[in-house]
Amino acid sequence: DVVMTQSPLSLTVTPGQPASISCRSSQSLVHSDRNTYLQWFHQRPGQSPRRLIYQVSKGDSGVPARFSGSGSGTEFMLRISRVEADDIGVYYCMQSTQWPITFGQGTRLEI
Amino acid sequence: QVQLVESGGGVVQPGRSLRLSCAASGFTFSSYGMHWVRQAPGKGLEWVATISSDGYTFSYGESVKGRSSISRDNYKEILFLDMSSLTAADTGIYYCAKFAGVPGAWGRGTLVVVSS
Image (cartoon, rainbow over all chains, first blue to last red; front, side, top):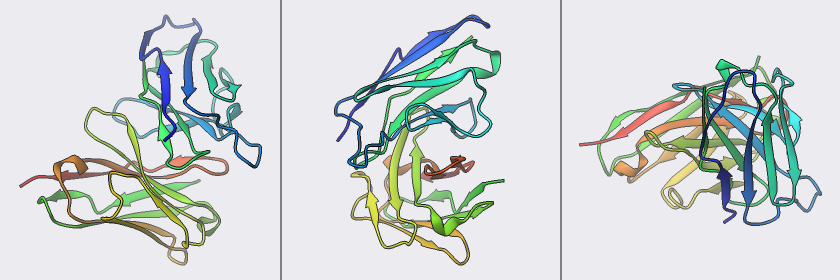
């Protein structure tokens, strides 16, 4: 199975400051179709997850531009350019390049 | 807009079976593979099962393999998950999710509690 390792597991950020979360995979996430199926989700307390980023760097519908994704191969990053209070919760990366689909452990963001 | 609404959760005794449903709307359901993901209390996300858009191909997570069945009704636009031989380890919120295309979507989840 592809192991997804996030870091840090928690971070505290001042509103208006940037934040970054790393996600490393134990194997390359480049699919035979040349796409990389790495997604990022945000789960606010008591809510279901919401997708922020798909295919490494593509923002989902309605996601603020201050969220961005980058990376390739086995190293990926989610960046929040200016953190807002509404950004609290847990962030997960997920790969669907290889079966089984696997998630990172989650990174808790606090303000 | 895209909506996924799960149902079928509840309190079930160990060893019993359960059928979860997910009603989809706001997108062409028959065009997308669909997924079940669960979350144990206070824990992270765990992929459970996936079914292809036509319903003929499926995959299961190791923890449910052999005692679960994912299916879909593309006419009624409903996704199902049948689980048997339930144990306390199956307790959690079960979400159906759409990962392909834009937008991605998750339902609000349905809570399953396995307890005597």
